[in-house]
Length: 323
Image (tube, rainbow, N blue to C red):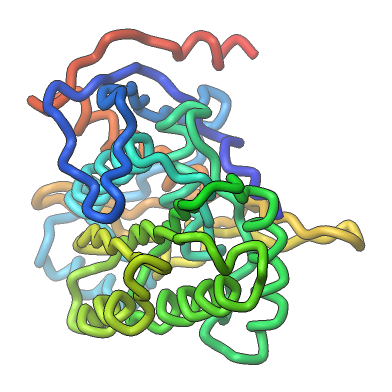
């Protein structure tokens, strides 16, 4: 399954880390070149005018309280800033760990995976599959069939098979269901049975009371088989998963040509509250997917430009603007 992930953004500046990465705990699989560049994403010029600020007012003002029931989505610049920091760390980790296969369960994986692909500028790419309602046993046959196809295509034919899974999480049911299916595939197919699988799980989750950290963490002790199915769990806590709670910002549709399926972004209008410091802005967008791409990109750029851990060493933006 494919996912059109680079419709609106492109790599802009090139940044290198000026500090050595932490050691990968399972398999110690960091590549020799620990300083591979990452790129801040930027929205292409033709897609930058997708929204307008209709009005502004102060946070906790009377207008703020009266607006709470009118707008289903309320996000803050600080939410994007923290999410941006985690995406930078996720991109660096994914670049440094030598995974043979990168799995992107849609729809939760759409935002982190698509953005990090742009930030990696082709240095890695995900294999996407339909994982909607993935914890429902009725869907497991379809999901397993998709996974087996992907895993066989990416099989390195070596003793160790390194598999990256990147997703968002809340209750932990999805990641537990997915790893359970991966374990069944490992045990049930002769092509894989004698391999050591190393699962590199990367999960963005919010810090709300609805997030079940214990159940997320349980995936390691429940499904690990030392020396056969080793699991490394990397959690990326954020204040908000942002697009997970506002459908127009992750407006993707599943289309089929009769033989295969493809996820693609689709334009959906909407309005939301955007808090910047003590100011709240009412945003009207004719394409929320594009608008949120811009907000993510701006925060990632700001993080990299001001980060003492990174140094800009080039610009590639014109290579994409001129196409």
